[in-house]
Image (tube, rainbow, N blue to C red; front, side):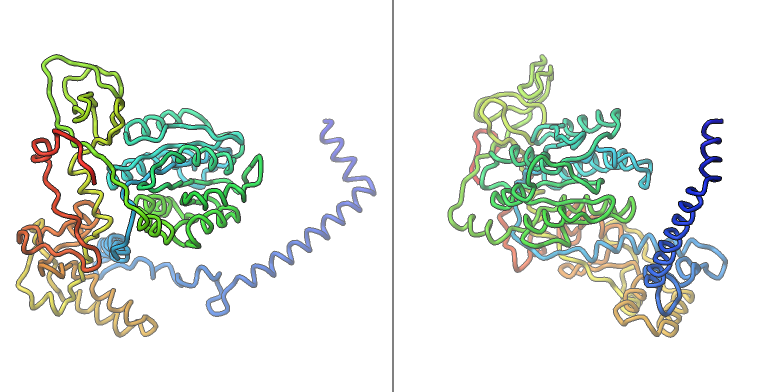
Length: 494
């Protein structure tokens, strides 16, 4: 009753009437300004918002075929999603293959929002695990560490190391906690800088931040920290979950020589979040300062290629002190470790396999893009199935021909490049420019993203292998079967 009496007395008093009138006036002004801003945002042609111009009618997105089925439309959407790989940069650049990266996670209360399902916090941890696995898959001789921002502090979640199992286990433990407090970018950057301080000159130093808040509680001047990171050549990438933040923009610009498009991305949805985060798995191109530093003097790095042993009685490994019958022996000090790649706990020698070194080189010598086979060439070609998986190609039909005619004749506003892209969507054939073999789009994805070799060129033998004219091959890498017999006796220098 007290609350209702106070509201009744306030509504009946004359002061409340004046207050109500002033509130109505302010609300009216704000409403008119909002309507004016909305009117400015509306398109002058279609009557909708500017970001809705590409979607005029909902039936333009997904169209039914003659039988009323959406299978063909969904298949086109899936294929268009796969075709995004064709727009990836394939230019051979000088990159650092021995990377040292610190992953910074925002664990503040802003991550409790549920605009991303199930929440920002849970989805960020899930994608962070996928990022760690993909990072070590593409960079097996690199190292990674994890830092969390919570309650205005930065805490180390996992040390800088090359074992992905330890990092995944540390992030899995975070799922039991709840986000709280505010983040501190300066504390996280200073901790990352301290962890990367002892990185040798042949390794790159990087920081990837998943930032969901719009504020940062810093104890000092963060601009001085940004200047220090730039002087120490530490690259910073930011994945924003809410909106663009000015300090994050300056941070990415200063530490990446003005490159903002590829280093700072604000996500649109869950799928875009995953794409922007996984883009950091590719090593960044070397800057002018790094190239000048590398030309001033080359440094040899000693690596050991141990052989696997299987013992009759279990013994302790030096890395985790666990009883195991199998493992790898360091060629320098004969200390046993359980997994590779890693650093020897006794002598500090980098222990890898020859396959790890070979997988790291695909960033320097990327596989050439395969061009799409159009319908005129597909009709005259004698190839009816994929060279790799033997999956039969789609044959041109009346529906395909009519669809192509409708696209050409009915879309006068579509450019020639877009029209050509729509025509080649129906073929599903991709040809290697070196061996001239045809592949399906699934084999195209597998060859460029996982295998990093052309099955047709590999089947042709050494004479059929051709490298890029810009990047020279570093030499043949021996297979894993010969690694133990040739390189297990002593470490080598590269």
